[in-house]
Structure formats: C-alpha cells, structure tokens
Length: 200
Image (cartoon, rainbow, N blue to C red; front, side, top):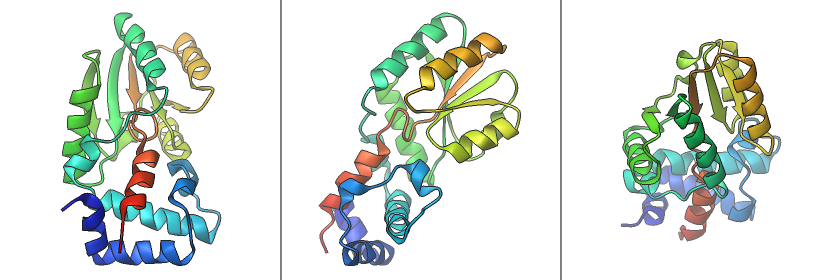
C-alpha cells in the first residue's frame, strides 16, 4: 500500500482530506510551516490539519525519500567550509514519532557529507541552546525559543548567510545547528505531492 492510499484509508486522513476538498483548496497553495504556525484564515487551518495528519501518519520511507530543498547546495557548501575551520556542524530537527526519527536519520546518512558530526532528532531544541551555539531554522517560533534559552538563531530566508556571518563574527560560536524540514529538506513540496496523490 502506498502512502497516499494509507492516508485515504485512515479515518483522520479521510476527515482532513474531505475538509480540504470541500473548500476546493489546491495542494500547490500549501503555506510554509512558518505560516501554518499562526494560521490567519480558515483555509490555513484546513491546510494545517491536512499537513499535520500526513506528517503524523508518514512512515520511515516517506521521510527518508523527502526531496532536498532547492538551493541547499549553497548552504551545504558554506557549512562544509565552516567545518573545515573548526566549527561543529550538527543536525537539529524535530521528530513526528519513531517512524519520522528513523526516516530522518536515513535521509541524513544518504544526503549529508561527513562534515556533519551529529544528527540530533529531538523536540527540545532549546535544551541545546547556549551562547556558543547558533541554530538555522525556518520557523520563527523555534528560533525565538532557542534565543530565549540563551542561544543564537537565524531564520532561514534570503538573508540567512549575511546573518550567519554576522553571528559568527560577533560571538564565540563553536556549534552550528541546522534544521532539516524547510532548510535542507523540502517538506512543503513533499506534502504538496502527497496530497495530490490522495484519491478517495
């Protein structure tokens, strides 16, 4: 059974997809995770429910085969140069259960260079925050928590490189943490593709 069929056969999947269909929403209009953190409309709430349902039901294979973020090569190149200059480069990504944890670890092993010294798949990102750490993440609320806990955080947008270089220049950073979803992994595109494959 493929994953889209699995969603269609689950009660929560059917309910989420039926609400999605009733509003005649298009998968290609899926907001980013950052936008879904504070849904501003009924449409956003339905998108969030659909996304959450898929992420909760996703198996190891779904996570392991997620596409790379477009432009991730530039970020990886910067991180490799930082590793060459003595910085610890580590993944710090939140799981959605055991299947996602295992799938994310497999994704890392298949797609990341040896410069990444550790893969942290855990929900309490802020517990690793200190004055010597910086987190690159696509979600504002996660960055805010990390900063409040004493670390430095950079929202992954068009200004990420300038902000990272500024943080590194003005602080004694030893470890750079990098999120997967929305930074190295195009989870949004993966969700859009999955929704498009669901048939009830």
